[in-house]
Length: 199
Image (tube, rainbow, N blue to C red; front, side, top):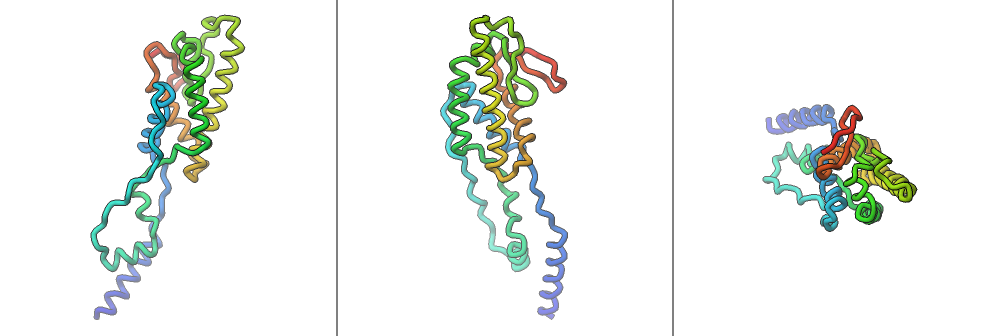
């Protein structure tokens, strides 16, 4: 009788595993937290956050035989317990350094004056060129171009570093929201429709 129960239990587990789909979803909350930390180090000139590290897996009670079988058949089932997103790589750290320096030397003044603003897609653009003296327009245009190049590279690198290049647009949207939320009073940004607003 015991052998029959194990056979039935094994058959049920195999059927269940056949129905299990490992769903790789975008960890929205973890991405927003990581974006906020990164943006804070650029806008607020804070220090770089501690190395990204995945938390230790939670301690589990001794497994039942059926659970052990499921673990053998679907070992990735625990991966969804601790969603995380990796933001720190050598490439992103180099980008962060350039963005911090650029923000401190030119972009903050342009944002404060209303000359540039944050776009709805996570970039910066000239909002009002008349607020940039003619002698500084070439420098401002170059800074905006360099900043957008770094931002595009950042979003692509974070998606790549997490093994999901297809997440680039989601990373971009998460950062776009973060840049706007961290904007200082008086800075311009685009709303979802593309209309300019002032914080």
